[in-house]
View 1 (cartoon, rainbow, N blue to C red):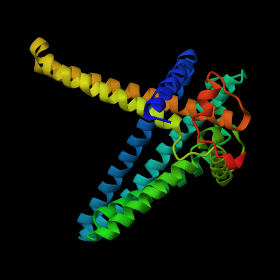
View 2 (spheres, helix red, strand yellow; view 1 turned 90 degrees about the vertical axis):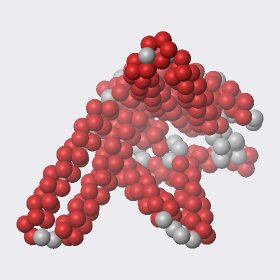
View 3 (cartoon, rainbow, N blue to C red; view 1 turned 90 degrees about the horizontal axis):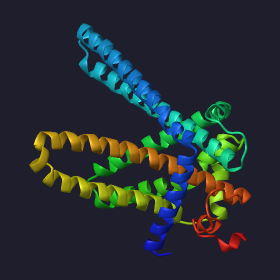
Length: 304
């Protein structure tokens, strides 16, 4: 499949997913609802870190042990940071799974509401938190590996480290491709969910999942289009409204564009993953064209 065909499929997938979201506007709530929780959690951990710093700073001044105090603060800060990432990941997974639950019930013409989907995910909260913990731990491990790789003076070690980092990251992304709809629709444990996600991906395997690739391509084109428009505006608008107003306008429009892109990309991604999972497991296509979903995977002939 050529790049232009993948991009065209991406446009069809994006358009169908967006139309579904616009026809079911409550879908967008699942992206908006966690934002206050993200801010609250981040502020809580920031406040906690400041309190810890002040306490340790007081110990430092009273006991004259700057090295021990610094080591203690760094250790607590690392733990606090990991807990913050774990919390934010759990919140994100919860609402993405709730959106997947809502979408699946909508396309199957079953009773669906934001409240019903959130309540359903509360019953899966333990599995979601455990999966978020695994994701967080692996993410921190990969970050540590990448930092160690950057600081390595040996070229061979650097190459091996980069290959190892890339292999783990790609393998993990493939393994968890269907985790969101599985968390939403199945009653499996964390490990069973991971196994089911990998097994479902294998049934219609593809190193390139053209749907995700295409959506990414469409988003990339949107970003490049915005950058081109912003650069053109930066040259033209100062002559019309002045440099100060141009700067403020560009800052505001950039923030609005990033937020809008995040909203659309998150929604489309979950809708697409849910629909492909329903198609792979039950043959349900919903608003998508059957051939479009079928071409989202390179089918493994040996599995037929």
